[in-house]
Length: 244
Image 1: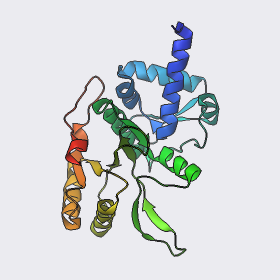
Image 2: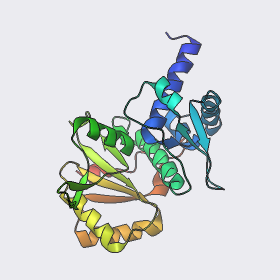
Image 3: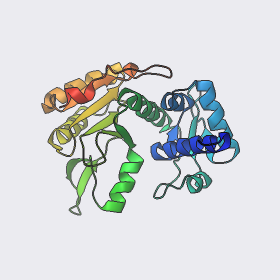
């Protein structure tokens, strides 16, 4: 059995690797991920920050702080092919929502794994195969234009089992653009289906686009508010079953 210091070191390593894969995380997301309190998660993140393994950023007033891995943290974590995430006012809300979504999906589907966009892109670069990407068209140079999901939820093993693409949509895109993306997902055979997580006002626009794209059998919209928070476990999303 691991000693206390070894156990803590292992937990810290796992937390840093999870952070690096997602880009940046909040204390609330870590609390959901580890099934602990927000105060405990904040203390763990703060300790890693003091050791310069993580960096804390809060570009938006009134929003939770985000923690991203540093280059020293990447070296300590042993991960390769990933770079530190740049947190800014333009991406802070989306990073925060994606981290919470990833943690919540892990809790809802403990027999699945959750992969972030950064890890998807890394694996695509290393293997030359981009999984779970919806083809929107062709670029002028003849290469396909792919739309990558924010997260992937999969069973059985990466590339071997069913893959559900997860999109965290916080703002409403132009209607035609949204329809094009929905059509691309409807054509994509690399995934079992697509789960959109969105606030109510965005969900309405998504439902209209899905209807126009005739993609209702491939795409499901779930309110962001339905995701479990720290201390909660929910199995009521049912997205994967609805997409089979």
